[in-house]
Length: 339
Ligand code: MTE
Image (cartoon, rainbow, N blue to C red):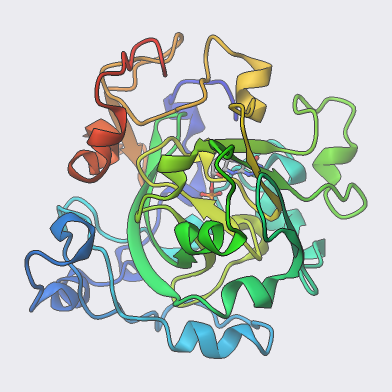
């Protein structure tokens, strides 16, 4: 990711988004009406799905369309509907980090349409009894697609609130039947330089493929999902189509895009950003306002959309606000050292 601190010059035209493109607060709040207590995921609110009338229609493959349409309206709502209004689709799909298409925030939206996402297959291998190469539809179809509204907090100190459509990572891991040696999960993004121009650049920082990893218990946590859509439609290519990880309590770089390989392994994988700058980016990358990046504070974040006149800086929350759900995974760890 770009190594830079938010400054007024970072704010461009795209930061100024008309209020009209927000899902109206009324609609969002309406979706939250009637929420029950004590539901799954530690009592997070669940409600009817928001309405995405303003979102451009997608063109999902035949097998995915009915899965998306049947998505359970099990919105896991952010705790603060006032602060955590949905980010407009336009911002979420035009301000991206996807270095395979370039390092600029608008590069992915401009260039990712050339990525062919059908057919798509994923290798599941390593310490598993039921590995192999699987067509994406065979991975997704047996699972229930759920909608999850999650905060996304980038290590660069900007953030969004995105309604994902995805399946449980735990389901996929369990079907692979991990052996007793499996302790970590390693993920890899596609390498296809002819369609991913950032991989063709001699200035690329990353040694492709982009790699990420989770401890097995983190990967089995119910908040961890493999997304196939957002805003009621399939994923735009720039957001990691057709299949990406979403781990909302970690900095955004953990949420690896366009996954082609999932390996159960014994040793902690070295993720791409850790390989580039281990003193700046760790394996865990849990959102933590008390542990600063060596070159900037992580205490606050710039919630998109914002503008010069409305910088929209808010406090960053421990584990991105998901401490009740995931805090116990890290009991006894020194989060300043294991960052
Ligand atoms: N996955 C791949 N393969 N390549 C990337 O450059 N960037 C990461 C993550 N996943 C990245 C990636 C970073 S730094 C962030 S913040 C999120 O994707 C951004 O996701 P978004 O563009 O959908 O908001």
